[in-house]
Each structure stands twice: as C-alpha cells, then as structure tokens.
Amino acid sequence: MLLVVSLAIGLWGRKTMHRAGTNISPLKPSINLVNTGPYRFSRNPLYVAMTLLYLGLTFLFNSWWGVALLIPVLLVLHFGVVRREERYLERKFGEEYLAYRSQVRRYL
Image (tube, rainbow, N blue to C red; front, side, top):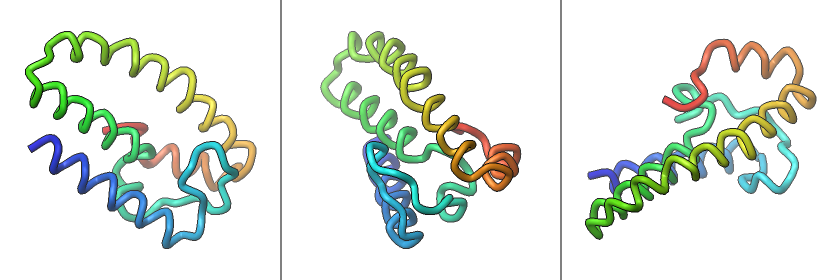
C-alpha cells in the first residue's frame, strides 16, 4: 500500500510541477511557486513520496534495519535540503512564499 501511495503522490507532484512550468530538479532554479495539486496539502510532497517509497521497500524486503536508517536520512534531508530550499524560495518569491508557507504544512 505504501508503494502505491508513494508512486501516486510522486507522479501527481511531478505532473503538477511540470504543468506549472517549473523545474522539478532541486538542483535547477525554481521558475514558479507551485501551490496546486499535492502542494495544497504539503510543501514537500515529492520528499514525502520518496520517504513512503523507502518505507514501503523496507517493509517489502522485511529489512527492519532500513527503518532505523531512515531517521538519519530524514535528518539530512530536513536540515541539508529542505531548510535550504525554504530559504531560497523565501528570497526568490518573498511574501508570496511566506503566505504559502503559513497556510501549508511542511510535510504532512
């Protein structure tokens, strides 16, 4: 079930970003602020989808050590990627991003 949900969220998020005309890769500049589709519920649906995919695969392969490794992975993702992206989006989109951030949760 986690695998199906993660793929659905991931595909929906990618499709929404593509329709908005912005880059999907976090290594490329954001062109538009996306606040439709799954971005109405989470500011980071693609990271949520990747986390659910990881958990689904961990459970599928009955690899409980994978669950323990998820904690440091999520810490690196949060502090090393998400927080940096948020600072970038705030600088780039200003008040528009701040308003969006105040209305939509970071993850779930």
